[in-house]
Length: 106
Picture 1 (cartoon, rainbow, N blue to C red):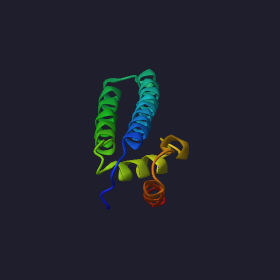
Picture 2 (picture 1 turned 90 degrees about the vertical axis):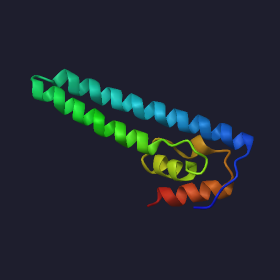
Picture 3 (picture 1 turned 30 degrees about the vertical axis):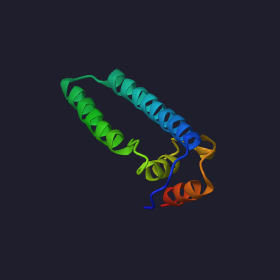
């Protein structure tokens, strides 16, 4: 992956998009967790929730990496998974946007 340079304005766009995607994904996880908790009826359900949260933590920790060297890949994944859309990353250079869209297409 190419080493992109980030302007101050692009850094602000990136931070805003990154934080919003993280917040939205955590909100969706919270909704799912509440649904699982409501349906829990026995001790095995508790451990199933624990296993679910452990897996989600690994996924989210592996996905949300705010190093500028990783953001193009991160945004590509977030775009593919629909945690962000084109308007969220508007303001990034066309070169960065094209790279993000290419990654999102895989």
